[in-house]
Amino acid sequence: MVNYYEPAFGFGGILRAVSGTCRALAAAGHEVSVFTTDASDRGRLQVPVRRPQNRDGVAVTYYPLTWRGWPLGRFYYARALAAACAREAGAFDVAHLSTLWGHASIAGARACANAMVPYVVSPHGTLEPHQYGLKSWKKRLHMALCGRRALDRAAAVHALCRYEADNLVQFGLEGKITCVPNGIDPAEFTDLPSPMEAAERWPTLRGRRVILFLSRLHAIKGLDQLLPALAELRRTCDDALLLLAGPDDGYASQVNALIDAHGLRRDVLLTGMLTGHDRLLALAAAEVFVLPSYAECFPMAVVEAMACALPVLITPGCNFPEAAEADAGLMVDPRSRELAGALEHLMAMSDGQRGAMGARGRQLVESDYTWDVIARKMITVYRAILDGKPIPLHPEPCEMSVEHHAARSGATKNHAPSHPELPNR
Image (cartoon, rainbow, N blue to C red; front, side, top):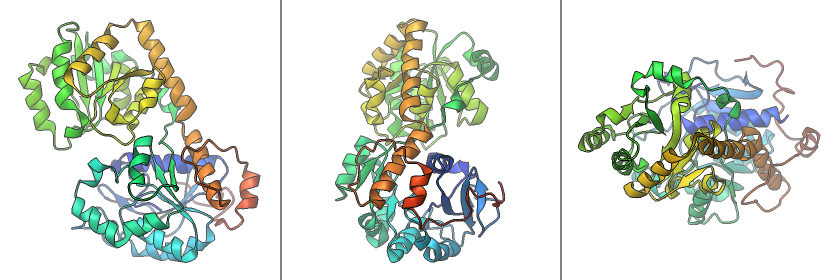
């Protein structure tokens, strides 16, 4: 159950994480059904409602929004979704609430509890201190009314990284926390466009060595330290250019003020949010990727950069120590002097040294962060729930066969074997 689903990609990373996992589970031969709404970031999706649609082997049923949620924010109330959850929850072996906030989580948790169906909850970092404090009165109200109950009744609570898992313990969830990161499809980043094409798209890049920041412009991203670091880097690398690619999240005016204060107008390119081919162009143009965040849950942009074999410069707040442990990049504190020193080190490396570092990052992604690996880790968690075993904190990828799954999961809702008659979308 989830508030929205593809093709509503304007909602961002959570949607891609949910759809990526679902597709991988279906590709492994498991029957996967999604109950969601027709919500879009621009209104409503133009999709059939109240009947399952085949999306890459996943049976997705969209239910019409009844109320978007104002003044409570993104609540996405759908009366028909709640009725469907109550009616059909008992036909499934296990459910996964891919949100803690919004109507889908309330309806799903209540229906599963009534049907005695175990479920997993994925907060997706929204209980992290830096996130929980945002619009806190709404979140505290939600937790008091239903969120706390949904967590307490869950068979497992899904964290994206070690840091989130540690924080979830503070909610009294020890013993039911499982840590599984998000994944990507490395094939999307295998055949990148030419850097020359990127220079044609943005002529400012010609003759410059590009450092890429690919994230939203927000105070938490450490740009107040990165821009002074770039000013310091110019002393030894005067052809460096910082490509700031991301949507404004209330911080663009401060970024522009910092650019002017440090005399960096010719050394910084602001592109706004990049998607599709333009996003690949930015990654192809870069020599180094940087994300100097003060706090992240799981930075997908870092994984994408590593999939492109780019050396990465991150901070402890990115909560991705695996990158530095694999020698796929550097990790320093989010202070301008440390960032400048690390950037200088990376830019002074030979092409071969940076290439080797990037190759180690790509290897790490292919071994630990593909959707197939992520899905098989989630299967390990689902299997532990169904078998009454302890929830693994760090699950190993499961090699469970479809035949075993069918024998163990006889009550799984059978919309259709492999969904052959579902209309393709």
